[in-house]
Image (cartoon, rainbow, N blue to C red):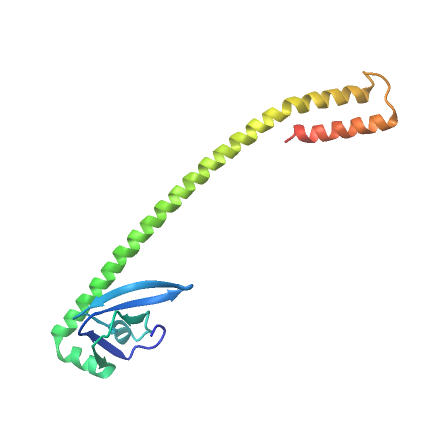
Length: 178
């Protein structure tokens, strides 16, 4: 059971066993073993907690070796020790290949997302530049006209009309600076 200290080594005699873990309500398969394979050696050897749960695909016959018996067998028979060591090395290599591939896939996804963001940034910048240019022409006309009205070039304005023209001029200046 994941998170518990390992106290046994399991040798599969029939069917298959899947090692899995649950993360965020998602089941992740760590390994699949079949007849003649074994599991449980990692936590026995390094003394850490089990990294996953085991589930048989159907009724399963397992030989179970308790910790003391496991160490007695591997210390008493170097060929068993070498076989387990080779298996551990193989699993580490396979994990390295798997994680390297997953890392390269994630890097490709990030590069693609980054390229899409770069393209969207260019489109946004182009749009802002175009919109700014399109707004500056009418804003310049409004700014110029409101300035002429306020200065009295089109005739005398009432105080209320001057106030409104000043608001138009002030807001046009703000728009022109965008």
